[in-house]
Length: 184
Image (cartoon, rainbow, N blue to C red; front, top):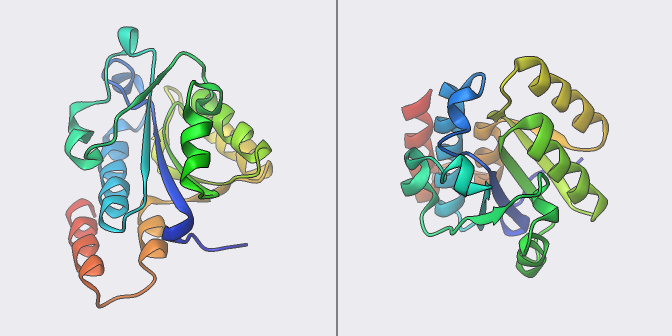
């Protein structure tokens, strides 16, 4: 088992889009946790990749995340797995980081297929369970069991940012703690 290391991590935000999010079970908790992850990533200089599944039909990434995601330009795809989408693996490989922190929707479709493919390409995958979901809770839970058995690490948004931080007393810590208190 290994800890997340900000110098070896990348955050991937999968398909949190306008026409898809309203149908997701537990969606109210997903956005604050993705914001925490994105804020933590930006604060600690962890790169962020954002994807959008068929944006013409499902709309863009939800507006609530625009500020948190900063300058990250979404990669459009029609493939369910991000790893099969155009330019994704090349972009990821170019970052030289093997720890992938995944959040987004839907757990049993795009998240599951992305996880399986990334594991197959030698990446270590952390699934942020409180920053992902599916339309039906049973699909989300089933996907988590399957992916954990297959080698993914299940974690939470707060656990991720504190692993990236590693210690208290820094300016980064103060900024992140303020964000954590805001969503607690």
